[in-house]
Length: 279
Image 1 (cartoon, rainbow, N blue to C red):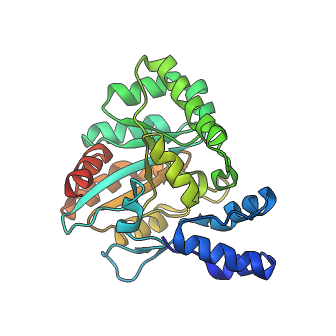
Image 2 (cartoon, rainbow, N blue to C red):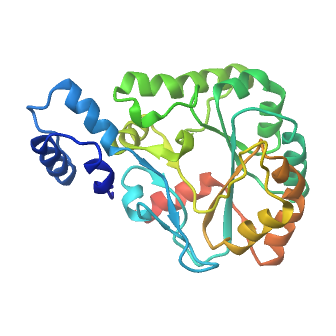
């Protein structure tokens, strides 16, 4: 796992602590003399925003952690393959009228997706949750209140954010939630990844997304297709936001275009099985 040392240096920590942090990061151990306050600072310093660098059109981008590094924590951002397969995911913060069109398009093209939902989405939209399940989609965990999870340093508080979503989901569907987790805003830390793994979760980032979440500045159809067609690649985990009006309008055509390019769709469940079998 890579650490952003430039960012860490900007925290203006005492030199002895900064050296201890770098040593701790390299060895995977915390030095025993750190105070609780310093440990809290270290937890924050470990945090990173998931980021991508697209090197070549049609090729998997470089993430700020590799597939192999993430695999140690049952975390994923893409599949290492030349097969033209796509794993489609949506982040759902609230429903503003686009979900029916999204679900209709997925049903038309016989595509199963994963919807990462927060607490209020489940409580406000139980019928949509039920429809997702009935139509073969997976509902994943996007935390109960959508906080910066990297600032949560105790397992109790971390577990509470995920458990509350699990409980709400089970109350509505009568079945346990699939243990798939996506960190809000893609902000994470090694501590978070380990906590999620210990809870039995797989953590999912993404290898393709675009700026689709600003409600007052939605991308045009042309802008959306330029990004989503131009940057699609084998083994892509695609992130779209269900709150996007543009996504609701283009999804039917987008799925058709991807299929015309020779792509097919698979589920995150199958991805995790394949990764486990390859270890």
